[in-house]
Structure formats: structure tokens, C-alpha cells
Image 1 (cartoon, rainbow, N blue to C red):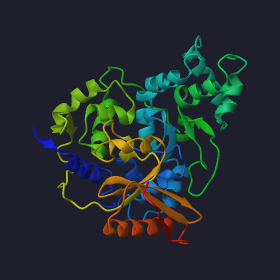
Image 2 (cartoon, one colour):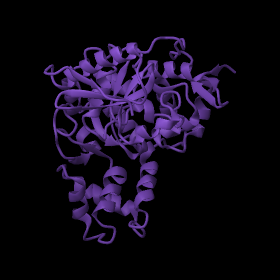
Image 3 (cartoon, helix red, strand yellow):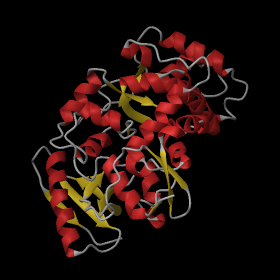
Length: 365
């Protein structure tokens, strides 16, 4: 079985994630290809798409949100994701059990004795009027019936797990600050979510395997689980295994992939890329060594924005008053410093609507 080294995996990942060459895809197609973008920080997906698409226009993404073609909802790993409407409806039921368990993992004591099916029915009844509500407003509407858990536990369980919700614009629109207002996903999109397959064949799970590999492969089953949070996919992997090819990494793990997916030469040059907080390309793996050193793994869960140099996390970045500040994790070569500065200027222009191209490279950490 062919062994893929870290650099080969890195270049394959960059290619799948549209980070090796900016793509000419429409924004909708890019969101679909990536399997969504993590979006609990509402403005971060705009930077993620700017780094991946040629001539990215942020108003296009805002238009998809207001036009209901793309939606913000709790999905993979119980985090807010920006996904296409079709994927939200197709995938949501497959994630329900995981979402329940993850909320219970935080609020099990508070929710002891609460019949979750009864709570779900009550939550849907409140939301059936189509009025957008915050999590706390929904929890308060049911607090008299369930006084013990408290509004936070009730609200989290309802909004993140029991009642499929969409977070409405203006939340998530370009250059817009807005609180979270929820409506039922089916009400916002005008379609019910797809029910689980009655014969247990799990076509949704099989589609998730293929979609994940298209955007993240080659990858191990543990990486797939880390991306979506679903533990129940071994049968889906087995069902599609005949459509896949296998490799091993340098640790001996089996990696699966789609036969025709890009796996560039490991020596393919990789341009500097600025990534937003919680970007897919880092959080989409259990083993993140293909793109970030173990010593810096904590950056990926702390919400740091990072810079890729030669395909690997080499710096963090912030922006304030139109100035992008880059802090290297170690020293840059002269060539790397020039490339980082050029890309940082372009990012500053994008974020400031062409008002500032200021870039500062700070002393290494």
C-alpha cells in the first residue's frame, strides 16, 4: 500500500480546500464543495472564502444567506456552520443524536429527568408561529413547565439539538453586527428536513463519507469522525469502501480517498494563505500534523487566525484600525516575509474596502 508522507498529505489537503490555487467557483459551489464553513464567528467565513476564491465578492455570500440558498445552523460537532440549504435539510436528521449527546455532555445534571422528546415537541409548538426568537426567549417560554434546568440548559438543548433551527440574517451578513434570532429550519427554507432512511441503509452517511473525502482526503476514519462529530459511520465507510482507494500515512494509519481526487506532487509550491478563526482546513482532522505542528495545535481550538507559509501554519494574524498584524511562530526567511507582506496587504485592502493596505510583521512569538 502506498505511503503518503506529511508533505504529500499537505498538498492534497491544500488542493481539496482550494488553498493551493484560488478557484473560479461561484460562492455557492465553494460552500457546497467544502461541506460548509464553521461560522460561530459570523465574519470569519468571508475571509475563508476570500483566501479560496478568485475575485470573491462578499455581497455574493450575503445574498445567498438572505436568499435562503445558504443557511447558518448547528450541525457538525454541534458548532454553527454555514452550509447550503440542501445540505442542511439532507444532513440534519443524521446529526440529531450526536447533537443531543453533545448538549447532554455539558448539561446532563441540569437536564436530569427532562423528557427530551416532550421538550422537543413543546419547543416546536412555540416556534410554529414563525416568530424569530433568541435562545433565551424560547427557554423563557417553556420555563414554567421546566423550571429546574434553567434557561441556559433548556435553550441550548432546544436550539442546538432538539429543534432544527436557522439563524436569521442580518446575523452573518458582511460588515453586519446582529444578535442570534432563530426560526425553525423547515419554516425558513420552506421544506421539511429529510427523514432518516427507513431501511437503515444510511445513504446520508455514505454521502457524508464521499463529500468529506472530496474536501479533506486522503483521510482516516478518525479524521472523518473529528470533522462531523458522528461516531456511527463505520457501516457507511464499509458500504462505500469499494468505491475508494487506500493509502497509509507514515504512522501506518489507513487513509481512504476518492480515486479521481487531486493528489499533487509534494514539491508543488504552496502560496501564502491567511485563514480565519476555526478554519475547516485545521479543524477537519483528528491528526492535524499535515498542516500544523503539534506544539501549536492549541491555536486551532483557541480561535487564532493563522497564516500558512509553504502550506503549514507559520504565524497568527489580527486586524485593528485597518492594519493587519502578523506574528510569526518563528522567524521568516526574506522570501517568506515578502510573500506574507504582499498577501497581508491584499487582505487589509479586502477588509477595509480598499481603504488601507497596512501590514505589520511583529517579533516572532
